Image (cartoon, rainbow, N blue to C red; front, side, top):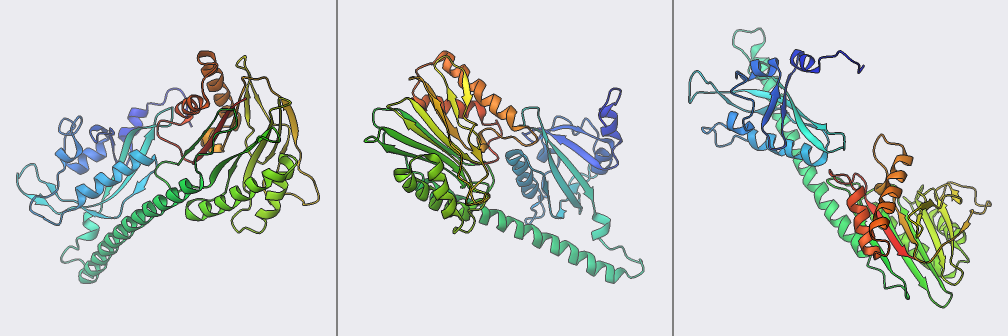
Length: 414
């Protein structure tokens, strides 16, 4: 329980486990007494010094990998903001009382991010338990030979696990790269609208496979005096989500050319989604812009509401025609749609949830953050091109540590 009167420095020092805090440059910021005792170092020999200056690899062991493995783990934590449990490590330590003498040591490390209030990684918490006695069987112990075999097997399996994890990371990185290329190929830059300004953006999540489910689309129908604007979000990630996204985007684009309005277009998309594996619970929002009557007609399938920034800088969310996601509603019930007038010079923004949602935060907070950003940029640049506004929104709303979900965005000057 958090409360007044708790001395967290004293708690940190009293922790029974060996714990150190590192800066993002891998310099020791603090360490508890258990860590100092285990490491055989004083506070002056540790704090303010670079980790691998204090604990370099054994220069007499050309196969030593402890420093490389630990560095890679800490860098992953700093980049992703996620904890990393390392496989068992052999990491020899020099005996300070006997310079040049290296002791064979084995460790079980866990590295954890310490987050700042804005969600960025501020420090790295390095917890480590020494397991040397477990690995090195001591002579004269009953069953020592059997224990030595088991412990050697344990170490071998731990090293194999580490190698498998590394191969998985590389495989995930390759899949992410392929999925992003596929996503980009299926989200080309739209052709210019007839006499109107628009901008589109796609930003993938950082350091994860949680990408390639979001899409945008603009269908210009100048003869009818209308433009259909849509965004959508497929549940899932990677290559499969990219494939489903491509099918749904194409289907909605085709439906928008012939549908009477956004509700009918989403109805057609919902029926199509029932035949596409992986399309369940996809969300989408569609807005038809009637340039002749200065009217927006919109409908949403479980998607965050489009934002309309008026010429005076106020923001209205188009949230009066929301229905469940695709495939999650009875077929015989028509989807709702609503109308909203707009004043020339307004700005329409459609986006996916990666732009506004944050872990542990209410969605209304994210919507308020979007509205504030739109109002602020309108106050300084009321006639800015949508390209400028789109870049400004991304700069404002993407956390410093990067997106945890991919994001699609459309901005249209009305």
